[in-house]
Image 1 (cartoon, helix red, strand yellow):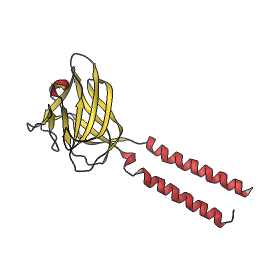
Image 2: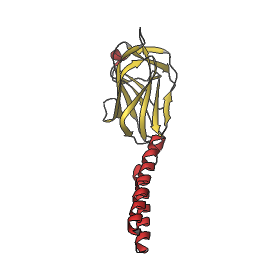
Image 3: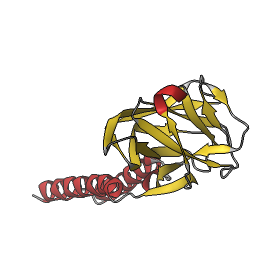
Image 4: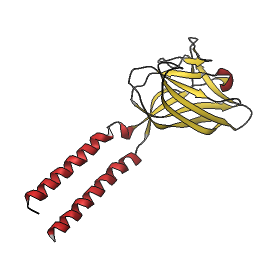
Length: 197
């Protein structure tokens, strides 16, 4: 009877522990890492392709990107595809995301899965869309990269209006949390065996 009771307690603790680990991710918040929030001019996204913005991350787990879009002559425009590339506009894709339609204002593009970046390295946000979507630019406001027009980085001092986000709940790696859970369960089982149950 004691053996059955102990098994139920262990199973209950196991289920509760996994629930807490999973619930931790649900309470996560997206935090701004890199940003350039000012805008002025308007640029047709289709004409400017390949269009992008260089950036240097301070945090490794990129979760989303916001781009300020101005839809010409309307309130909604076509979808936008985002590729996060290593080194340059033609570099290896390390993350992707998309939205089905764009609106005038800030458009949040969540990545399909986190892009694990190397802090301090250069990356490029490549935005793929077409007219009537346009991006806004501002003179020389972001110091860690250049904007990219028709595949060429521009040194004229303009930058796209963008924000990169990371997930604050994933800064501590999940495997560490699982390891702690597992070691706690091993200790619990060791105590039950020591008692002879």
